[in-house]
Figure 1 (cartoon, rainbow, N blue to C red):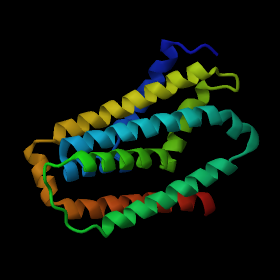
Figure 2 (cartoon, rainbow, N blue to C red; figure 1 turned 180 degrees about the vertical axis):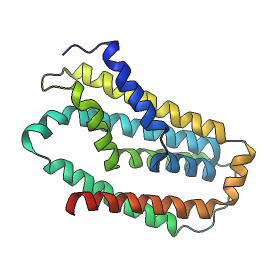
Figure 3 (tube, rainbow, N blue to C red; figure 1 turned 90 degrees about the vertical axis):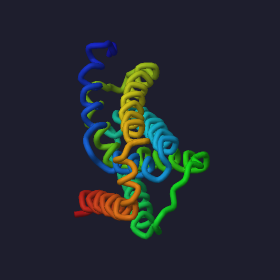
Figure 4 (cartoon, rainbow, N blue to C red; figure 1 turned 120 degrees about the vertical axis):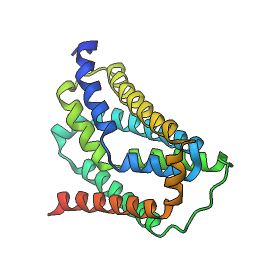
Length: 205
């Protein structure tokens, strides 16, 4: 299969639609921007994009294997992702009220890690990427073409969430959201727990 620009256009459009659709990833980026301002929000966005890009490459490389050998490893990954979502969801629900200041260095690091993990361990992203890429991939796809597709996914994802973080920081809306940080933590936690429950439901029921 020869990968060309025409083949990338529909993939890119679907990836853009997936990025801008509200979900746990957007909620986590917003929460990190609220907690730590622009620095942490951008760090979270970059971490998310890198995790998403790595996940995309792994999904692309694994599609042929999944088709020929079953879904055992995919199921294990989905369960690991569900466990992570439960962990971070409970942590958010139980989080105390936060104090805000302008010291972002450590928080930016935390935001990067959280963004990376929420992308890399989110089983819905695996399903999403598999659905997008399955029609464009065969067993003989060269590594460089897999990297191109994964890079497109990384760039689109990172760009969208950086825009979200930059647009919020320094605005009255961000100040208002900060005042409601505890409520937002609770809502995000519930979203993540619901997602984890949906994953388990789909696997076993």
